[in-house]
Image (cartoon, rainbow, N blue to C red; front, side, top):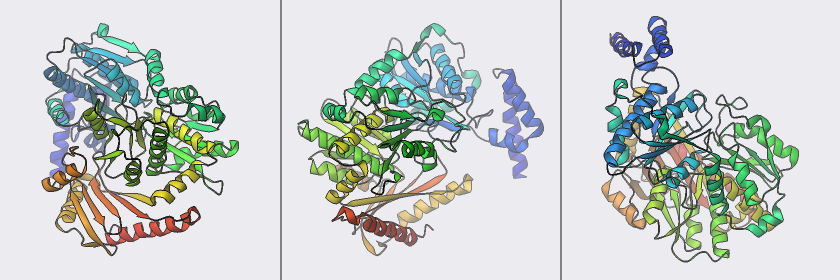
Length: 580
């Protein structure tokens, strides 16, 4: 009976898509689903695609639970309504729009531009695909009140998404996020203003590329070193994405001359034909670039995701093998380089800081302390790093920041993770190591020798559907009510519950007064220096467990042995928590 009720409800909802304002092609596809594919019909219409705190993300297709021009249009109308309320004293609200190479991304970007223009906004629309961080830059450059990028990041090809930004160039945070969601939920298709005013839309492109990349070039800290190491071999692949033009451009502006590409992956294609997944976290996505590195004896391999806000890197180990570094290791190398060069160049004046997320390696905090630089912690999500930069603008100086999920930033003119600038600065860090007779891998081992060997691991447990969400919530409740007294034999020294007011207050005091909002996150700290973080994913039906352990590394020759012992410790923690 329940299934029949659901089907009846879905058919009723779908029947509303058989009339205007829906176009003829959409109506036909919906009619075909109603007549002959009940399973797919339910998937497409059983709910509204949720506009969450980061915007929309979903599979493309017809229906209320799919990414299409109508769900995009309703999201844009809701955002427009909120902007009109918030900026009632602004003569003309301005917005910027960018998109990645995914299928329908240009269509969705133009749909967004049309709806904004119909609401009387001035719209700056990039003329072709561009990196997400350039959208953040454009919002600030044009003094916009908001912006949107059409992207589903590293998701499979069937997906697309819609990310909204505020006037500081950062992704939208509280209280605006929840208030925008409320406005979007009020919008139905017939309430969307589809009457585009094309005179309000201005195409932007090469001129912004030049200004943005020149700003990035100004971040360089080692012109002399690059002159000596300009022929260093760099393999770069955009993985069919939007870094294809600007990453090589910035590398050349920095002074690097030996940049080798992977021609098959320079083709901007939303089907991502050469890879299973456009995710630089996965070694399989880097296979073609690694093979090119082997063939050319390259010093460094870098790959960016489709919207060029995250970067994965590959370096050679002491056996000459190319290995993929994880996000914490790349963050370690980048932040260590920035701290070192800021110190060597006499740029540390006592008011500088870095930012990391609470699930990112504690090694960053240890390095910052040695350089007498403040390290601020924030919740997972680069929007919180952007908020810290906004808070301290003109008061303290941001050196750099990062998160374990392969996103990094330096400078203050972009307010989201930026793989374009990260590629340039990582290449510069590699040149710095080479100029000192080291590979990037040897540099990493030297850092471990000084600060200790920190090792991290992430486990994501997928729980699909309504029952899965309920199980995830039960797991969080159980860990809260019954935290272990010991983990792997090591006594618990601290429990941080980010839904608990006292814990939040304690975290804020430790964090130099930077406010950490409430969140469904738990952290366990043990006497042996282990850190276990638990949080439900905000975008996927998963609960995530982050493990961080550490030990001394007296000699770099002991790395493999100590690393193996830390791997064993992580596995023992996982077993003790009964996660496998």
